[in-house]
Image (cartoon, rainbow, N blue to C red; front, side, top):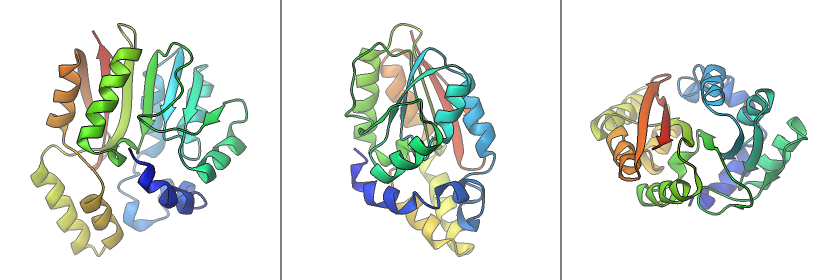
Length: 211
């Protein structure tokens, strides 16, 4: 359920904000339009919002600026510490996409650059759980690296290797990046309408609304 990556998140906590600003050349295209991506997600929701994979709090900050009541969920203790330094008014709790406190009604679930830490089986379990918690009209708005097809994913790996971006190639090969048809099917099985918006060469935002 993504917790196998906690040590990686801890190690990344000090340099994550530099990475999303494009200072790591390997991941520059992955984080292209980063602020616009977060703005796009934040503009799609209101009310009480649960954010998964808070990281250093960049999306959280934008949600707070839009007057959302944010419940932050982050499995990495060092990432939680970084986020709390930025946004002191939000409680950021230990948890993940599948295990989290459910003490109050939720109007939307959001996440950025994190859903790929779940296998497709775990993604389906997560969506099933969110379906039971959301009211009609409730939303799931996630930004993540997704591919149109497995062939496109393979081509991205080969291009990364050609450019000697070996860390990126390894990430694409070993983490659980899925395809748009698979995500679409998962949501439609749970009676959501879903819309995909391409934000850069890697990242799409998908907005799912419970019918």
